[in-house]
Length: 430
Ligand code: ADP
Image 1 (spheres, rainbow, N blue to C red):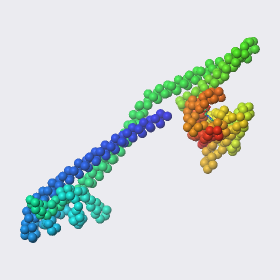
Image 2 (image 1 turned 45 degrees about the vertical axis):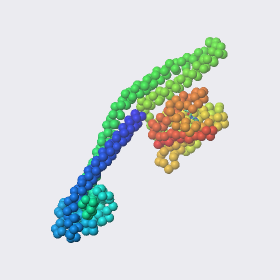
Image 3 (image 1 turned 45 degrees about the horizontal axis):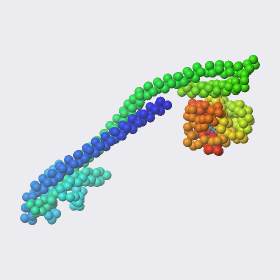
Image 4 (image 1 turned 135 degrees about the vertical axis):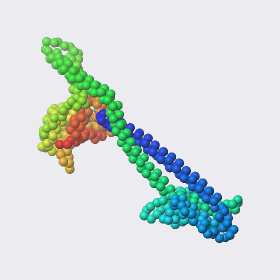
């Protein structure tokens, strides 16, 4: 149970941490990308304006002479920052070109340029071999006063920034993952520390229940024998009322003894103090014995009680505990079946499974509502408290049955419908 709480706390801590880390990474990364993008955009726009100013004289000369001045059309550059200047006829009058492999693509882009004047746009170019290059491109119209002279295109290869940002994202994600693992580990440690006081007080409570139940057993059995002794003593002359009181006392003491013994079983089970001693035995033998012990009660109530299933079914389990579980399930079935009803205990090997054994207790009694089918396995949970009390129930039977089944690595569940009956299905590894 504590391991479950600890794991749950760790999951919660880690989930909160994941949310924080993801929001941190996403917001800081987007912020960074945005700032860099804006910076580059501003740079390239300023560069475009600068180039436009520098080209006024050249473009004016070309417009006046109608010829391209020799030696003016090429400038050397590093291929990252480039420009193209065009006169009004669309003739290229000057350029500092980008890297050879992207030239044609850049020119294609310039020819089909749709961007607004002076606005830098991020453009992706697809190169052969599934390679991509990222450029910031900007076009500016060149004017002298009101007179248009031509257009200048400027561009910058920002692929290295893009690659850097991608790497940064990878590093951030890996860092995030690393921190998450550390956070989960730290969360697990912290959760372990946080539940220590709860664990201690729980252990004290369990000890108290176990000690109290143990201590109560002796006085209760003394009380029971005393009441029985008084009741059977011929020398005592009791009024009918006193006899009734003594019988009621005896009933209540028996009930208390049962509660105390059930509580002790569960307290010891919780404390891990009950050893499951496994041995190989024929489960049918135990089933027959249990059926035999209940037969008088069944006959008295007019209920048909039967054993069905395969014979010679061997299982490796704790004989006493399995027998106790059968007693609980059949006792319950007999309590909640009306006169002329039937209870069938089936023990069989599960078809298709290697050695899994099914123990099924089926009755055609009052049935259980769907919303209560899980709750009945909880301690002290009784659907009809008055009826259960009258029938001698404590609300602990199914909790004990569940513990026994789980201690053997099995499962227990119920299928039931109101007015139709209930079927308790136990699955045990043999
Ligand atoms: P109890 O000692 O009261 O029988 P259990 O833990 O064995 O306690 O059962 C819990 C409750 O589940 C019972 O009080 C009863 O309401 C319900 N229950 C158990 N078995 C059956 C059954 N075969 N048919 C209908 N109700 C059942």
